[in-house]
Length: 197
Image (cartoon, rainbow, N blue to C red):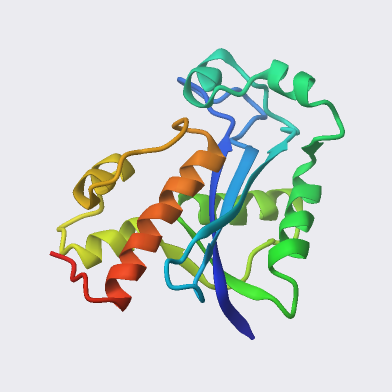
């Protein structure tokens, strides 16, 4: 049974390369960020923003990836083993906190990359998928709500809504937070008298 007390809005960062992916490697989750968008309060506040860092198992962190998301080997050295999860442990923590049998909630992300990546990495590593069955693609929802011909990027969507990006780009926690701001404003306008153009 789904619960609609809040939507978990999430974002991920993965290992990446500027060119050909080295043999034996593939994009792996290295940061998971999330924030709760609470639906039962009039202003739909965002609560409990957090991020989890995940040790890559087969991929090497590199300078190109650092130039995108700012995460390198020193990030993990600074965190230490006690604050960085394995992929399996990260998935189990997400399930325990948000998606247990009695608390299956909708989750959301900007676009469909995050959902597809989780499904693929879970399959590759033999780990149980941590989320429930319901997912909102906020990028597509925005395009539908604004009658666009095709999806647009987050920065352009925020500009249309009169919002400015908060925090660091390509940081999973901040990207999740800003996605949640867009979704919250969409839902408030759909529920209230502020019609979309």
